[in-house]
Image 1 (tube, rainbow, N blue to C red):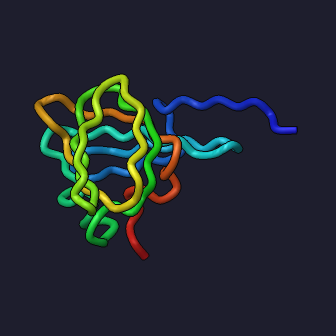
Image 2 (image 1 turned 30 degrees about the horizontal axis):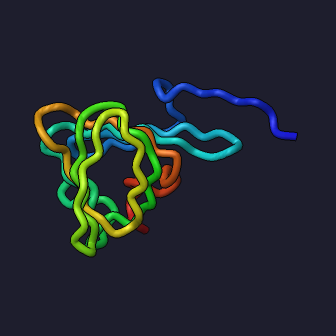
Length: 120
């Protein structure tokens, strides 16, 4: 039987600094959760791509936007925005960037194991 667990994202097990942002990860027996914090001007293709490579983000994101706005462009051309209080699923194959002058803060329940980790 699994035991109950809790951890604070304010004391993450792992932090991954990226240009104009940071990724904080907590690991529980049931899985990993990450908080992403991106400053205005952050864009995946400019701030994360140099770390991980590839043409677009290949991480599957299922998460919740705490604050700010994120514009997402899928490789197939579909575009949408995610804002505070919204839950989203962003499949692999996308670029994204912060909209406006407020930082974006989101919590993801998938993708923490691989997001913003240098390619080998």
